[in-house]
Length: 562
Image (cartoon, rainbow, N blue to C red):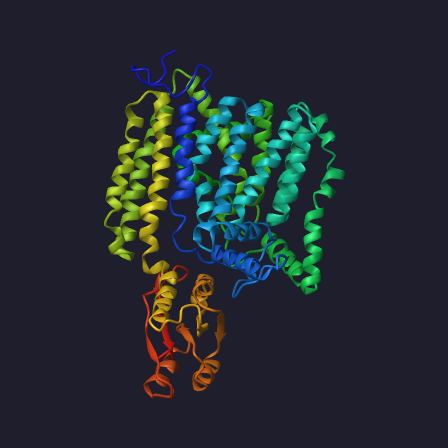
């Protein structure tokens, strides 16, 4: 069998497994993209900055039960993710890398579960290819770059499902304990989603899987209750802390409102999450569509397909029925998509006649991507961020050049260059493009607070005075402002306009960051020389709201440190 190029360059062995060097190559690329690229850009509002603030409060004040931070009440969740960030602070210090390290670790762990644990169920070749597919998914890595709770949830969901499948293949107390330990920790990450997935997969396998009788040995009626104990213990301490207010909020906000309605306009039509998955697996789109069809059309074709079918139905299909939608909701199904794609890749490698399939694939990789980069992204950057748009054509050309061999290489090398294109795309997206965007007015909260810090340093007052936030409009209530303020000032305070005037008259030494509300009154007071103590007043770097079509919302500063 001729594999790869005529010079003996091979990426698969005789059993269609990816060669070890291929796994190592993409594994190292994955580690670079995951831990070394884009992890130091400023915090994303609102979720990531709120989570960073929750963890900082836990780390500094020792309240490990109830997440608390200024302006962040609606982002409160069960605490596992915040605990992990707080531990990361203790290891790496309080910085952006530490905020994202736990989510990066969760994404890495998910990939390793696919590579090291799924092979017994889906075959060693499928495990290898699913690892490569997963590590070149745009959205899976983005879960780490924005430090979302869904990264840990995805890991525990994947570990739970794979452990259940391994138990079905060969019953063992190890797999049963791993199953319920994963469920238990998944509940501490985000509550019900992991219960929905595992309960649904268990019931689906009880109907479809040939070894369904073995499911009885998992004893969900006993271990399922035991798995709730860590959550119940946390809930008890939380109740003791605030009388149950947080628990009531979590139930009403994340169960009643999310399932029965829409919050913050976060919605979409049926098919929303499938489109998200298509974008996430864009380099593998033809494989994904074919794998999805095979899984849905023939769930009884094999135990592998019945497992993926149940996984997709309750990890993806369930969330299509909800009115409330965000791209991260169905992340628990993305490892299942990766496995479905890997099975089609193996069929593709075995087939001798897939020319039409290859042409569709080539068009998807090169033409569609070039259109996205050259016709969509560049003009947007050119209009909104002209200084940052300079290198977009260069980056898009590099990515297209890497994809071009898909047209000419043998079918095994088509796979290699598709994965390479995806890995380089992720590198450029979160590297130079991410940093260009980070230096734009759309993400200037860190630079604004750093400008205030520098002003304090001129008076040798670093970390010795409070930062006062005053008159922020609804568009300006970004959690990254108090988060960065906590890092560089002695404390954070929030004043009304009247409280600011009173503090200024009392000659309280403060640094004030003004938002746009009541700014006219502040300017009038400054011009009328209302204040007796010498002060400085002036503008700050331009800030454009991502929540308001990049409209400019001005900030000003005032201090009496002279």
